[in-house]
Amino acid sequence: MRLIEHSLDLAVQRQGLISSNLANVDTPGYKTVDVHFEQELRQAMNTQPVLTVTNARHISTTLDGHNGASPDEVEGLPQRNDLNNVNIDREMAQLSTNAMKFAMAAQILAGKFRTLKSAINEGK
Image (cartoon, rainbow, N blue to C red; front, side, top):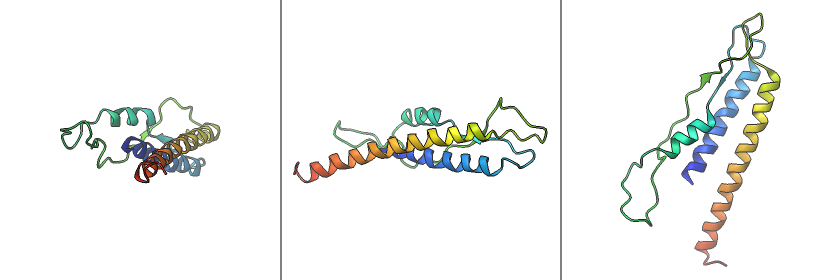
């Protein structure tokens, strides 16, 4: 569940960055920024646990206290004469992809909560 939580946090952060890119489409010299979603999730999966798990039934503590990813300038995008490299079509595609990733993670998390609720209610 913590990995799903991290995925949702990254999607929210990325949504803000994409919105910022779109808002600055006409700002001279503005450079497109983004986070590496898949790389950040992969790194989160490899994070060492904060506490040692001494029994297989213990809940994993990996990803506790995770922070947002650091945004980086997107390299290799063509620049216009005003040195701005925001491409509206690219950003809209990124926005759509990010929304799908968020919706998928939210559905998976909702399914996990339904499973927990069923276990708490003894399957009723």
